[in-house]
Image 1 (cartoon, rainbow, N blue to C red):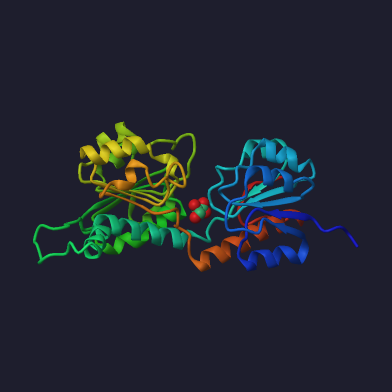
Image 2 (image 1 turned 60 degrees about the vertical axis):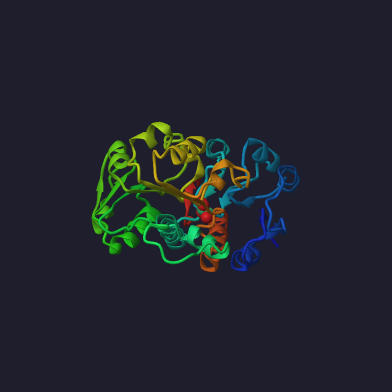
Length: 325
Ligand code: DGY
């Protein structure tokens, strides 16, 4: 009987993904909800043919070296793959895959939820009730911003950016503008207009960051950017924390350069509870939970598993980042 390919899975993932892998591979799992420590990862990878990893695992030269030259593929159970040294994988002819599409709806939905949470000051309201600070109705209390007639700016009109635009349009926004590495044809479906980054920043009442972290987007939102934004502008980040310079964000929120921020992703993650941003009333921080739905998680696990299997059978993967055949 031919030897089954060996796959290491760096976390306890939903059953649909594991079941698929177990049909065709010898599978070993880091059986925990917590991230595998690097030294454990290094101990478990020698001799594997495939690695199914999470966005918390740094897959660098050391890990690839420890795995050995038989390693054929690295599949991450995430859309983002900045934790994988793609260049190093390329040089070793290791296929890299991700899980696009399957979390588009959950992340788009969460982005809009976070925007409304922030723009309507909902957590301050919830806190007031809990703290017994809810007095008689006051006309000037906890007034937020409506979406109607606002200009929405989206940085990164990929699947998630588009999903956010599609969901916000029925709110009666006046305009959707976007910036990306290039114009995209489907922008017309939501009436989104491509603009230079500086125009996006200057004209938007709300900016949603829906892009990847790349050398070009790293700390793109810094004090220089914040100073160009409207004073009441709301910044929402569901892309990657590294797109925003967090010390500058703190200064911008406390000095009134911008109105409020909602972050589902931060730099670092987890953001310590003692971080100055956590104490601000005009900054809402969620613990990177954009794709936290049962549907998305099952599909992410299945897609990541299918990507690994596609590599072993020399087929196209659903989320090919780099391919060698
Ligand atoms: C991803 O898939 O990259 C997300 O950030 C996880 O929710």
